[in-house]
Every structure is written in structure tokens, then in C-alpha cells.
Amino acid sequence: MVTKQFKGSPEDADLTRADSLAREIFSDVANKWAFLIIEFLGERTLRFTELRNEVEGISHKMLTQNLRMLERNGLVERTVHPTVPPRVDYTLTEPGQALRATVNGMCDWTSRYLVDIEASRRRFDA
Amino acid sequence: MVTKQFKGSPEDADLTRADSLAREIFSDVANKWAFLIIEFLGERTLRFTELRNEVEGISHKMLTQNLRMLERNGLVERTVHPTVPPRVDYTLTEPGQALRATVNGMCDWTSRYLVDIEASRRRFDA
DNA sequence: CTGTATCCGCATTGATACTG
DNA sequence: CAGTATCAATGCGGATACAG
Image (cartoon, rainbow over all chains, first blue to last red; front, top):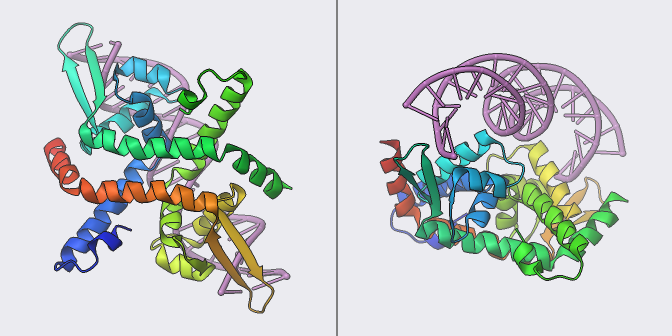
């Protein structure tokens, strides 16, 4: 995985720790909801409900769950305004923005190979 | 999602079709096994068992399933050698290689923010 | 070796109700 | 509005057996 970057590292322990963490990150972040949240959040600041409306099809629970996960990994910053009713804003941190670049890369990839993908699918399904 | 790229498109139907396909791709590809397969496949050609050994922890079933999915979307090419015992080679197509670039981007991102992520987690878990 | 099919437990998910 | 908790469903994923 990230093994390549760490080849030749003096500490093998670091290598395995890095690898297992990388594996964890993949498990956490490499799911469609997280990607969609990151993508839709963009450089904006959205509150819970706004985000819920943007990311069509996501359930209340999944949104909460993924936001917590992203917050835990430091990709999203959560700011609570002590008002009533409460207002909670979500925004991407700098690491979050950096990851968003790769998510956008995947979006670009999708639109670029749209036709090829559809063609390949038709071929395969036949 | 890919809406931005298609803003101002003359055909609204294309926009929604593109969006829904993009959504499908996300659902398909944005999972850890697919990412790991793409990453480990790299520019090499590997057979089923080799791939199984590389992607540690993946089950027979998940490997087959993901390889089919990737083949269907035209990301991997599957070539069967009519020998006995059979030999099946898997390799990334050009679209697959292109997507691999973004997957690599995520690997780089992981190793780059490793420390920040660990720190953020410790903070959050406290 | 590669692949399909089946069974089954477990985790994920959605729906719902409830709190601050 | 934002979030937690609970419960039921269903779908994912692993293990196994078997075929080509």
C-alpha cells in the first residue's frame, strides 16, 4: 500500500504501523457516503440539515456516523453554536481539502470515461 | 457531484444520466477492496492467486466479486489461458491506470497526513 | 487453478422514537 | 435543529463444497 513510500525505512515497526493505519483509513474513508460528503462540502460551510439535503439518499444516521468518523480523522471541523435551536456547522479542514482533491480527481475520471464505462458495461452484460 | 463539469450542458438528460452513473461508480469503486486491488495490480499482470496473496485479508469470494465488477466497468482486463490447470491474468486497462492515479493520490495523502490523523484521533477519543 | 453456488452469522442500515 | 438510542431487516462477507 504505502509500502513504496516507506521502502528502506530504518524502522520496520513504522512501516507496519503506517501500513495498518493506511489500511484503516482506506476502510474508513473509501466508502461512497464519505466521498459524497467530502465532495459536496467542498469549500463551503454547511449545517447538518443542509448537508443532508445535498447528499441525496443519505439517512440521518449514516450522515451522523460518517461526520463523526470524518471529524475523528481530522477531515471535518465541527463547530457548535450554543443557540436554540442549535446550529452546527461542518467544514473541511486542510487535510480534508487535500483529500478532496483526490475525490475530485475521481469525479473527473468518472466524467472523462463515462462513455467507455457505459460501453464496457453493455459489452459485459451481454 | 460531476454537476460542475456539466453546468450549462445543452442536454439536461445527459446531466442526470451522468450524475446517476457517477453515483453508481462511486458505489462500486469507492470500497476498500477495489482500491486495494487497483493499487496492488499497479502496472503488473497478476493471476488470481497472486492477487489473492498480495491483497492480504481478502476472501476468495470478495476478490472474485470485485474483479468482476472492475471488469464490468472496464477497469481490468481478464485474459483466460486455455490450459489445464487454467491460468487467468488480470491487468489494469487504460481507464484503470487512470483511476489508479487517484488511488495513488489517496495513498500519498494517507502517508502525508499520517501524523495529523493519529493526533486528531487521540484528541477525539479523549 | 479459477470460479460458481450455497448456507449462515454478523454487521450495517433505515425507521422510529426520544432528548437537549 | 442536531443528535442519540433502539430495534428489525436485509444484505454483506466468510466458510465450505463442488465443478471445469
